[in-house]
Length: 171
Image (tube, rainbow, N blue to C red; front, top):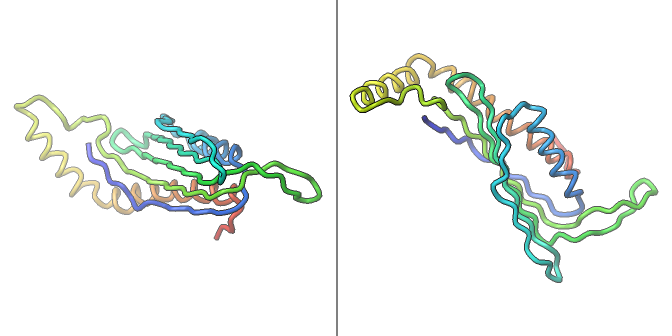
């Protein structure tokens, strides 16, 4: 099993946003893109201070692409100084949040996720060498030119959804 983390996508926002809509859109994107395992290992909320509350949220999702390749995306969000406010938008009062948002999206490409190239001790060295040969010579270009790019593209699509939900200009 080998994991290849791609470069992280960082999103920073300061201003008004809808916190519940942001979480719903992220979860909906994972479901719409057929990510199998959706795990939320961490959610922290610190007690309110005069400047606002602080939230930390982590989500992990996996998608089996082939019998050998799996995409993983780790989504981490931290919100500082979040306060509930009412604003007037298009002549209507709406409740939103004001604060600072920091989001980190990390795409990871995992190879041999079924551990087919693992085995008992007499065969372990041979299977490891076979896996390295398969990865470095047979499917090297498919890994580099396709699966890594697609994994990073999926993370970019999630980043676009986050930016649209936050109200940032998306290019």
